[in-house]
Image (cartoon, rainbow, N blue to C red; front, side, top):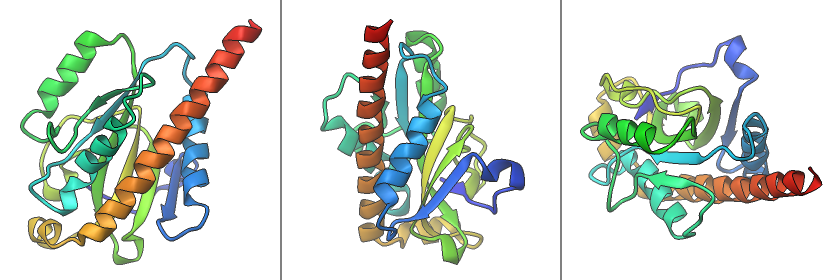
Length: 201
């Protein structure tokens, strides 16, 4: 769980922030992800880490995205964090250690729920750099990811745990569907591009 503050000018060029009601949201997120994937080598393994817990409505965004992605049974990425096997404060450090042992220089995508300003609730962000899980509820946890996606599920700044418990499930479900669908679309397109490039070589 993050807290989203206003982006600095240096961050703005590497951060997409878009409302879930925007009719172009799927293509906008997909294209921004492809922009980040283009900086990786075609053979780089992609690891998706969905942070959160199913015991809090607001903080269930990550596990919901992970569960949606798991249904694709895709070889295009390695997945950590679902409703059945969540990645949260207790096991995050252990999970990151396991990933570092299993994969050599993977490209890691962090996904988490986020608290923010009232005008930003319902927005999804794609940001270069690591996720800071736990920041929204004053927890010190290790950073996650080369890039990260967050869904702003509610207002931050006051009684964060209570706010998370009283977040609308319909919004969290909507954001999780958009993130999972857009991310899988970007991964498929990037894989096709990588295979096409390898064939030309």
